Length: 96
Image (cartoon, rainbow, N blue to C red; front, side, top):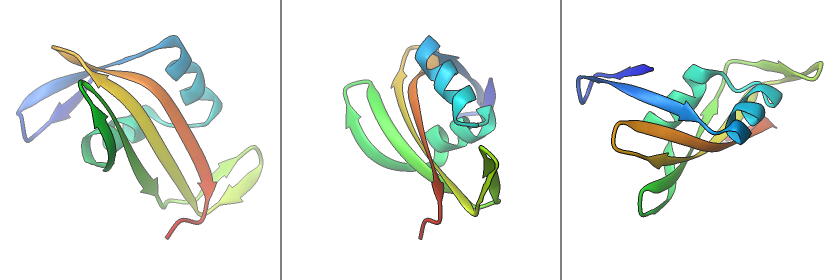
């Protein structure tokens, strides 16, 4: 659960089984996923579903290889009381 200061309320995040597995496999932190949904660049919206992307520039090691940047793309659905994370795609490398 994350706090959204603009709406002054807690945002409940739920993950599908697929999204939980992808989140663990691709080393995408829960806070990174929430920041991507809340502040990432909007890619697409269809009905109550959307996708956003965000680049994190903190330096990351993934599968014993160092990468300067990590890009997250999150596909989610807005439900009445929560955000349901459908899938997460992570790419490592250098992004401008």
